[in-house]
Amino acid sequence: MNDKTADLIQRPYQEVVDDILTAIIGGVVNEEIIFDLKVIRYPLAEPALDVRGITGTVAGERSHAFQKEIDFIFTGEGNAIIWQEGGAKPDDGTVFYADYLRRESRSPLTDINVGSVTRTLGEAIGREIATVYEQINKAYLAAFVDTAEGKSLDLVVSILGVVRLTKDYARGLVTFFRDPAVDGSITIPEGVLLSTAKGVIFQTTEQRTLQRGQVRISAPIRSGDDFKGDKGRVSSGEITEIALPIAGINRVTNFDATFLGAEDETDVALRSRAKAALAAIGKGTLEAIEHAIFAERAVLVEARDPNGPPGKRSDPGTLSLLVEAEPEGFPALMARIEETRAAGVMVSVIARYVFFKPRVVVKITPGLTPEGNLKVIDDIIAAIQGYIDGLGSGDPAKGDEIQKAIVDVIAWRSDVAQPGAETIVDVVLRILDAAPAGDREAFKKSLSDALFAEVPSTVPGGGRIPDRSLVQGPSGERATDEEIEAGKFSVAATVAGEKWWVVLDMERADVLMKEI
Image (cartoon, rainbow, N blue to C red):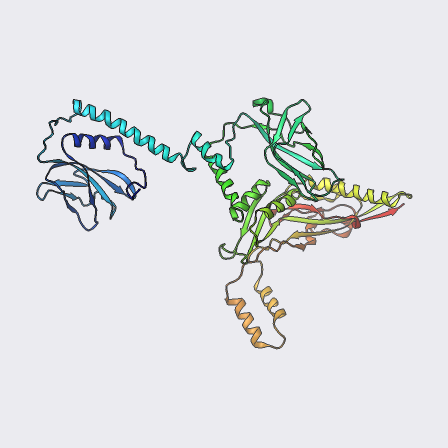
């Protein structure tokens, strides 16, 4: 292995044929000459009758064929090649190759015109050699994920456990629901068999973990081997049975119909999936965390790390992520990120959530036991939670659809800390609070640092900011106490023009039971 054989080259058919014919008639093939940009005249090693062709490297591309009388000329005086002004020239410092005829040749073969026996044989041999060059290059390129195609690409990505998706199997998502009586984490393994009432079989294709406090989780599925094609297409709500019960799972269903791919997965899509899987193997990288977020059906909106651009940097050893995720899936997302992050790196995950705490007064008939009261309270919270779970991003929670007996509502929004939100007045007030009383020099230095030093980025804190203005009446303004008591309010889910999620933050203490 040397610098000439380290990379495979691709030789065009015509170049191979010219070399063969030049050698047959006793010429010199591929004489190596180093090009120097300061020199335009290059003598040949042997007396030449004429130059048949020159190839070299132009703009990094090898095997460029230069044109005689345009890029170069041959002069018998001095037996030299002269590069022409305005024509193409080899890259400085590279080697170009000259084919030329000797002045005196002892070869018995001289006729290389089109149609001659010598040329016909030379072209036949050249075709086979050029074909071998093509096959070698194709075998070489088939070993890399960026250049492999078809079956070769399938073999390359198989080392990562990635398999091309085909149109033969129906695909979709099923949702597993927790049994309310079971606490703790529940693992749903890959390969769980599911079916419809009519016996159409499906199986999960990835493992999922239902975290403590999480009500449900979705997992990807594909149809069984006996249900290829249209047999595996079922409507929403038809997948309801689990072949072997999973402890802690109450029920399962599919909210969307299963579907067939229009075509097999393309090479481009397969390469992208393989690269994402490879990036995920190296835990701790931002690419691995982004892949983990995508796997939980969430979207990474913004990431701030110590190497980010000015204004979007976090402190060393920390990573701040702003994600778009359903509230129900947030615990599982946090668990997946915890598994992926590098040891010693503190990751803050923030989503655009509007939390609200309704306080409810319930009138009940006398005689309920304490346990009965708690059951009523739990049923109320579950009913409100069910309504909130059905809302999407940007959908407000309407008071008349929650409960008619709500007497107070408190709302917070997530602290996503937009950079630049702190004004100069905020800076001065903060310095006044922090500076020692009576120490003029300390105050002056703090103020100077704040005004002229580089402004640090404001990293999302992930806390909650009370924002009573999000509880709005019919007019769109902040709701009055009377409007709240009458249920004529909504919890806004749009903040600064962006869509947020409404999240219920309610506990038993927020329900007041009054006997009639």
